[in-house]
Amino acid sequence: MNQSEFRAALLDPERPLPAGITDPEGRPAPKRFNVYRNNVTASLTEALRKAFPVVHALVGAEFFADMARVHLRAHPPKSPLLMFYGEDMPAFLEGFDPVRHLGYLPDVARLELAIRHSYHAADACPMRRELFASISPDRLMSARVRFTPPTRLLRSRWPIRSIWAANVLGENPPKAAAAEDVLIVRPEFDPEPVLLPNGAGDFIAALMEGAQLSEALDRAPEMDLTAALTILVGRRVIAEIAAGDAT
Image 1 (cartoon, one colour):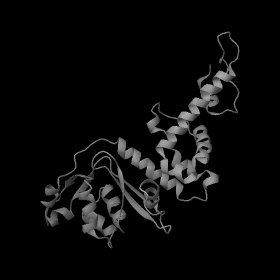
Image 2 (spheres, one colour):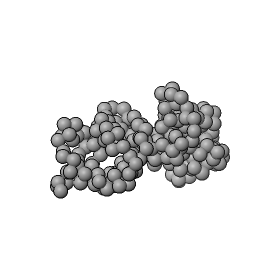
Image 3 (cartoon, rainbow, N blue to C red):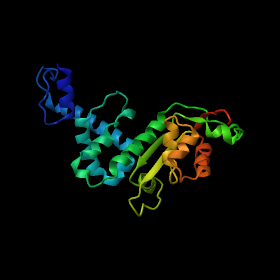
Image 4 (tube, rainbow, N blue to C red):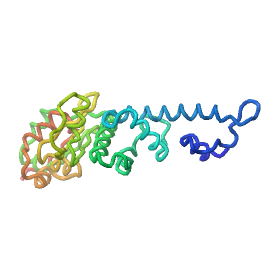
């Protein structure tokens, strides 16, 4: 039996029964194969539903199930671990015509994917606040920051954190299609998307790229540095600060 033929038929009910699928008497067994195919489709659809609960809520259960079947045929699993299934969902949504009018949907999927990545990321001990406070301002300006592994930054022209919070936390839905920068933090066990203040996305992006704190500030001249550092230290996302020499 050709494995690629079997896999393609397993995910697409329009394909013919693969050669070699027989009952104990050696006769073709399409009904048995269909049961197996339906179980696989149901399992993958459920994996996507668990991975993207907000996307599921936004489009509805019936539409999501139909969309999932299209997705799984285009993007079959690459790993036997279903918890990693769905990496291609944001890009898939960008090219899926029935949801093209929902411009925010791919970025909402990226947010949910980032939350899942944060959940499965390695543990790390964040820097203690008293150590941060002991660094002189001069040395801090020339310092570089290493973030904890669960930390993720997402930048969107859509209000993705507000959409997420409306569906997960019951907060009021966004009133306008405003851009939002979101920091995924995991101070203990469960990741949380934190809405960043104006300019903090530029600042944190620069730090993640390896810029010194003073260089990152140049990227965000209008940002409230105290508010940004309060988030970084208070949410325990800094693993280490490599402080520079005082000038």
